[in-house]
Amino acid sequence: MEAIHNINLNSLLDTLLSLSTAFILGGLIGFERQYRQRTAGLRTNVLVAIGAAMFVDMANRLHGHAGATHVIAYVVSGIGFLGAGVIMREEGNVRGINTAATLWGSAAMGAAAGADLIFEAILGTIFILAANTLLRPIVNAINRQPLDVTSAEVTNTVCVITSREHQKVVLAMLEARLERANYPTRDLDVHAFGEEDVEIEATLAATSVDGAELDALVRQFTASSLVKQAFWSASTTE
Image 1 (spheres, rainbow, N blue to C red):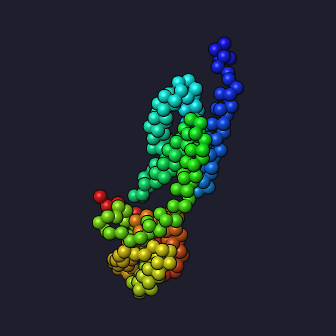
Image 2: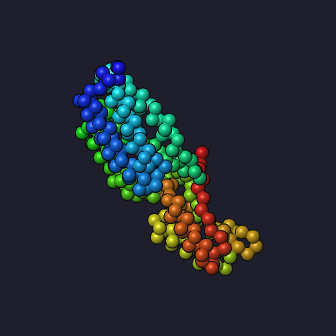
Image 3: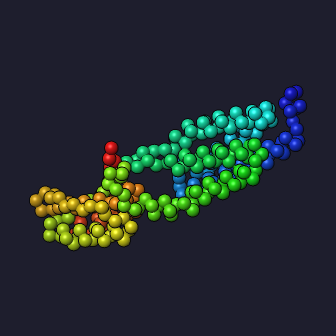
């Protein structure tokens, strides 16, 4: 019978507004992640936002603002476990940190919606989307700038194997194509590779690269009749 007594139309409408806000705003954040094919996409961000909103809304109804404040603190710490699951280390690069931070932001937005701070939740969503979209070109431009060797954490190298007679042509082609792709070289080395071949090693100035772009460049080199083998790698410096 207590469940029947707990039914309150005004409270239900308030909860509906909070969850609807979390669903819509979480969907906007998740759509941007899903569009870029990130690990945590549309459904994950929506569920995180709704979950945070439900916890805060429930605590607010049962224990008032004091209870909601305590639950928000637990949401902040608890979302860390979920965020850790999307962070991966691959070929010297750490991936997923931005996605984990976005989940954290979705939880904060959901908590605001659950606390009936609707306009604050909307503002939070706008800033999260702005951080993931408007700042992307700036980040890419900064990451491609040459850094001091001593401060570089990741060294990206493109290697091409060709015959000695084609060394100069392939060397010029490698340097030109990397420049065209906005990946200037920091260093170029040529090593003997057997009796008739050489390995041209181009160390990129950029410490953050787009793996898909370098894969495409490697395929272009491999398709050339002058190139016997091409590949790229990333290594960390302790």
